[in-house]
Structure formats: C-alpha cells, structure tokens
Length: 283
Image (cartoon, rainbow, N blue to C red; front, top):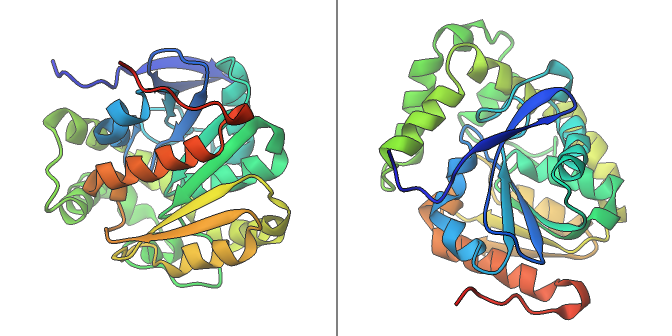
C-alpha cells in the first residue's frame, strides 16, 4: 500500500474504460494528460501544489497508462477529439489543460476544435513539427519500419527507457510498477502507433496553429535530448497567444524538476483565470 495522493479510478467514455485520478472539487478545473511511457502517476511530484486551489483531473489517454486502447484513437487529432469527450463524461465545462509530451499535439488539436472549452493550455516536451528532428529513442520509434521487435521485447525496452530517463530521479516502487504494467505485453508497441503518425499529423497541426487563440505556455526543457527545444520554438513562432519558457531540465521536467514545472503551470493558470478570479490556495 502506498501513500500516493494519486488515487486512480475509471470511467467509461465512448465505450472505453479510461483511467483517471482527481483532487478535491474546486470552482476551477484542470485536465492533465499523462505523458508517455508513463501514466497519471507522472503528476505525483506536482500534485499537491497543482491541486491546492484547483480541481485537478489527470487522465491516461486511450492506449496510454492503464486506459483501454482503440486503434483509431492512437493519433493526436483523434486523441484531441477524445479529450472533449472526456470533459463531457466527467461533467467538466471550461478547463485549463496541461499536455506534456504526447499531450502537446492532442491539447492543440483539442483547443483548435473547441477553444470555448479551455481557459489556457500548457504544453511542451512533445513533437511539434514533422520538419524538425527528434532525438533518440523517439526518432527510431517514429521511423522504425517494423515494430514487431518492440512487441517481443517490451519489458526490456521499458526497463531501459526508465533507467535512462530517471537516472538521477528515483521513481517510487509503486510508480515504476505502474509504468511497467501500463505497457506490458503488446501495450508498448501499440502505443508507438501514436507517435508514428507524427509525419502526417504534425503537418496537419501546423496549418491550425495560427488560428489557435487560447493562451498557450510552451515549456521547453533546455537539456531535452528526446524532443529538442527547437520544437517549442517552432510552436511559439506560430501560436499567436503564446509564451515560450526554456528551462534548465531534461525531457521529463515534471518529474525531474517538479517545483519548477508546478510553478510555471500555476503562474499560467493564475494569469488566465475566468473573470480574473484568483486561485485561492488551500489553508
């Protein structure tokens, strides 16, 4: 038994079992999209701060974490549309959305489709342009012609990935176990299909960027070897109501530098509150 503030539960959305976790109810709501290859537990280090004055809901998108998968949803545009279904299923109106990593493209597609559902967007560490290079291992995961090797060697891939990503940031046993279980069997190889759509999906997203008026904060870790900061710069140059923060951190900044990450998110939420109401911290 762990003492994590993350208490996962499930809800059915469009026939799929979706895993999520939420904090105490507040007047303001925020939706957090789990990064890959992680889960809702990726937000454990920032949970207390983010949930102090906001109703926070963390979600594993279909095919990620412990949420049920469906092939047609393993692409950013479809995932963005599914985000809107999640909001409806949870009874959430207008929210702040935080979409690191794979959530970057999904959040932007969602904001492009329904800007009325979002107060603000926080993204980063996610592929933004099909014209820009990605670092390893993501570049290989996107371009590898045959993913059968990954289907057969998922445990090794996950162990190596977690060891390389978190050498200086030890994961709690319950977190590591959840990440490994989330992508066991064929789950990891299936989840790869999302990023393998980047060459076409990111081209489509680029056409939408100038029309997205929702305030967007782009957090680009300076030492990100997986998704170089150039992807954040690409977005900042095209999103008309955005700000770019290049931060001294690696790819998984939300776990490597959680205080910095939470501070940037909370600052953005505070700047873009409905009717300028301040977020009151829990006392």
